[in-house]
Length: 305
Image (cartoon, rainbow, N blue to C red; front, side):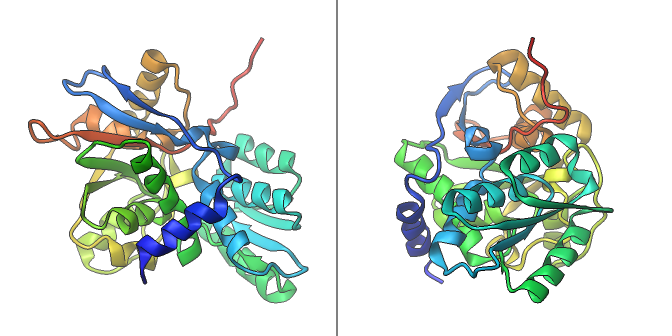
């Protein structure tokens, strides 16, 4: 597949439907070097997922039965938002693990929502059954070309905004986002994958040489808790750098983003930065580093007085 062409076409396709998210250069966090950050948690519905959802819906004919999606929360919200914006009904399946904030977000958008016992894989199974029974179009959370190309628009946009980093650090769940990064950069910049120690489908696949099922738990599981890495991502990820961070490091990065920049994110949104703060990834002297802040749907939602 000509990924550059697919992503470039997606950029044009979703223009006007997604937010161009801001980029900052940040110093601090106990680091001796500045970090470029793209604040993708400011995207519609609080994560990058709107990009893949809009690209999928705008690149195919949507049946009368509408769309169906399984999600740990963020993808479901994005699929529901994109479907509503384009006038299609949406059926969303999420696991209980999604948590009350993300469930409330999807309900607020107006989708037909089913909360499923268990984890993402259980929701996906029910979504696939609904697709077969109803004829609805599946918007896969990460392992579909249109999804990966849509997520790749984030990195095309970042380069257009003047990205100077040698290395881009990205949190990984099922692999749609980092797949988009790898598909766009194609070796022109180093891409570093960061996963929680307790939800590490890509790391396990790279270690064993093939996608394998992993156990899923931890503070970021409702966003990064894919049981198995997507085949598209795995195919693109050969030989890449992959590091793990503990839950304590993720929470520390969340706290640092709030304390030093007043950036409020969910655990997944802080996972990439956690690799730098904790030392799980240590740049070489002079290496310019960038971090994607990918999600802002914290649980519980903040209360404002």
